[in-house]
Each structure stands twice: as structure tokens, then as C-alpha cells.
Amino acid sequence: MANAREILSRMKSVQDTRKITNAMYLISSTKMKKSRKLLDETEPYFYTLQDLIRRILRHMPEVEHRYFDSRSSKSGKERVRGLIVITGDKGLAGAYNHNVLKIAHEWMQQYENNRLYVVGELGRQYFASRHVPVDEQFHYTVQNPTMHRARLISSRVLEEYETGNLDEVWILYTQMVNSMAMEAQLEPLLPLKREDFGQISIPADIIQEEMQMVPSPEAVMDHVVPNYVTGFIFGALVESFCSEQNARMMAMQSASDNASALLNDLSIEYNRVRQAAITQEITEVIGGAKAQKKKHNR
Image (cartoon, helix red, strand yellow):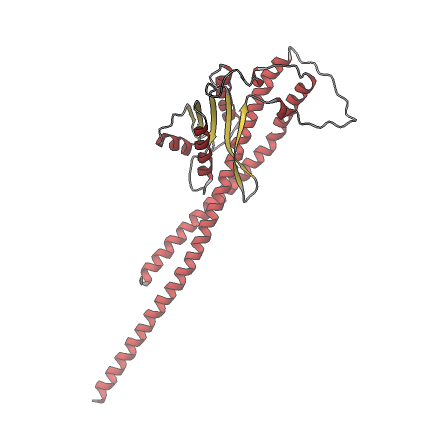
């Protein structure tokens, strides 16, 4: 059994660790609230862009555009697929990064011609350790999701898609369902599908307005779709960042609870050791007193 000094030293170490985990919990909570507020403020703009694409396709269904070109002439083996993988830059977030990387690994095994665009330091290290080539690593983007950084990612994949280097673009991110549940989402980003924009119900009393697009519907699409893709990527960045902070909050809360439980056990053990030491000292005093009494009686 450890002595009292060793137990006190361990208790102090656990208390210091609990202070760190509590601080990390509060920091993650603040970051998550800030990011959710940012997403709530920008979502209406991108929902409007999505609705605008619906309106264009509804009024002009005959419009053809490269962003809707599925390139069906290419077979499955010939198609080049790009995947944007959003991971974290730091650990201590439970299974957050593991879930994303597991799905990315399974996705890569299904297709032959793959190109990776990794967001997050842990993702880069994961693929580097397995000697998987990464076309581009966007450094430290996940720690501070902004529209500028989302535009950098979207401009790169749009350029690759427009030049024909990519036939499909997918994005893998983590969506926060609620404060207790997070799910890794794998969704196609390009080409756009008309049916995804066709599910809209229009009330009977709404007048179908006429639309005039200058200089042409294709030119309008050239401007709207890149902004829509940028908005989708920005939303994925913020959702992933919020999920990471929420996962870290849960991990730090669990660590703090475990530290409290460990402190309680150590406190009980310390009291037992201290009580045993006091009992031993009393026994020694009583024994010494009895020995002195016997010596005195002689």
C-alpha cells in the first residue's frame, strides 16, 4: 500500500489534470457557440442561392450546364473521383477523427481513380503514414472556418472539375445531430443533380413570376453555382468544427468526471492510510508506556 505522501502527490496530479480538462471544456464550449452563431447568420444567404437554382431550373428546364453534366460517357473505371476530407488538427476529441477516416478509407477501396483533398492536420498524418498520396492539404483551415478559406477549397475543386481532371467531387464531414450525437456524412458535391433541386412545393395562390436572366441563364449559373458550392463547403467546415468541439467537450467532461471519481477513491485511501498510521502511533505510545510502567514497578 502506498504511503500518505505518495497518495497526496497523486491527488495533486489528478487535481491539476482536472483543472486542464475543465478549462478545455469551457474553451470548446465557447468556440462551438461562436461557430454556430456564424453559421446561423450566413445560412439564409446560401438557402437563397439554392432556391435561386431551383427557380432557374423550374422556369427553364431545358437549360444545360457543365455543373449538371454527369459525364455518363465515361465508364466507372475511367471516372476520376475527388474527395474532400474534413478532419481535425488536434486530438482529445473522442472518436471524431476516427469515424471520418474510417469512412474515407472505405470509400477509397470502392474506387480506383481517387484524388484526395484533405482539410486538417490529423487527416494529413493519417494518409501520410499509410503512404496514400494527397493532392492538396489545406493547412489549419478547420481551426477557424471562414468564407475565404471555404472559397479557396471550392475554387480548387471547381477548377479541377471544369478542366476535366475530376468527374465527381464528394465531401466527407461530420454533422452535429444534437449535443449528444454526431454523424459522419459523405455527400456528392459535383456534378449537381436536377432532382435535388426539384423537390419544392409551391402553394396554389402563388403567382409564377417571369424570369429574365441577363446575359444568359448559363452566365447566371456560372456565378450562382460556385457560390452555392462555396456555401456548402463553408457549412461543412462549420458543422465539422462544431462537432469536433462538441466531441472534445464530451471527452473532457468524461475525463473530469473520472478525475473526480479517482480523487474520491484516493481520498478514501488516504484517510485509511492516515488512520492506520495514527493507530500505529497510538499503539506504539501505549506499548512504550506499558514498558515504562513495568520497568518502574520493578
